[in-house]
Amino acid sequence: MQRRTCVSNEKGFTLVELLVVMVIIGLLATLVAPKLFNQLRKGQYEAAKAQLASIEQGLDKFRLDVGRYPTTEEGLNALATNPGIDNWDGPYVKSSLLSDPWKKPWNYQTPGTHGEYDLYSYGNDGQPGGEKDNADIMNWE
Image (cartoon, rainbow, N blue to C red; front, side, top):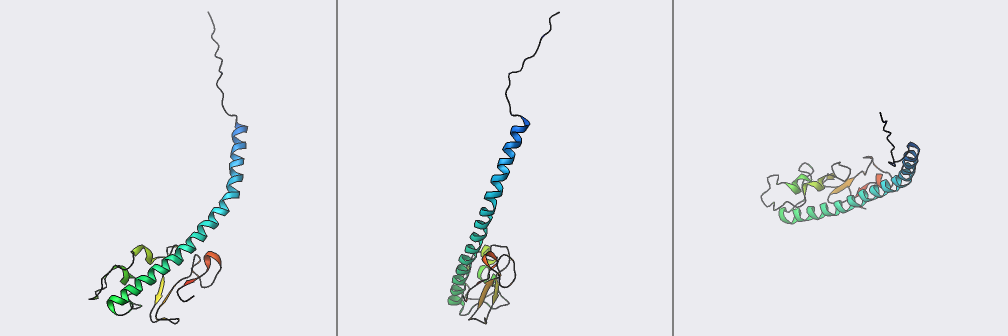
């Protein structure tokens, strides 16, 4: 009776090698992730400023057609869907612009305390004031 021996020449990674690779990937992630999140936050803030400008243009077009800005009660929704106004010729903005990049509705009031209307977002934290991505975005500044 002959006994067969199985000799394996397959090569693979050892557990130690896999752990070293995982540690290296983890270190790289801790170095890169904060910079990526900072860029994301900065991008959201810049997007909010661009949205504010687009909404302002929509408000001006609404005023040209209707003869007035939407009331506070009508809100910014009057730019996307007709609230029953005769001369309304919109939509003046996409409905996706009615929320800021942090998924909070824009604050709108007319007449405003700083002009004909006030349009603003409190930024990422949703609180007045703040710095960087928590800073307020307002149409009067």
